[in-house]
Image 1 (cartoon, rainbow, N blue to C red):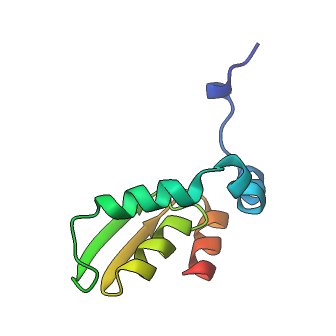
Image 2 (image 1 turned 135 degrees about the vertical axis):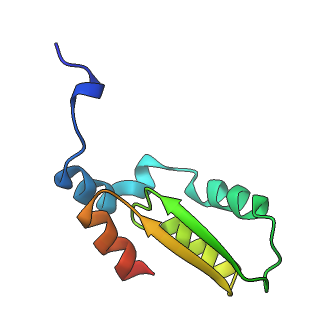
Length: 89
C-alpha cells in the first residue's frame, strides 16, 4: 500500500488546487492577516519578500496590497501555479 508521501504532486493537482484552494484553506483570510501583521515593516516602507511555493499567489497579493512598496519574488515548482500567480499579481 502506498502512502501519501509516495504520491508526487502533479500539474493536475495544481489545477485542482487553483480551483478549490480556498476550500482546502478555510481560514485563508485570517491566516493572511496574521502573516501580514508579523511583517516587520511600515506600509510605506520598501522591502523584498521571497514566497516559496507561491501557489495561486493569494498571500503575495495580500502583501502587495498592504505594502505598496514591497517587492515579491514568487517561486513555485509548478508551471500551473506560476501561471496563476502571475495572472493574479
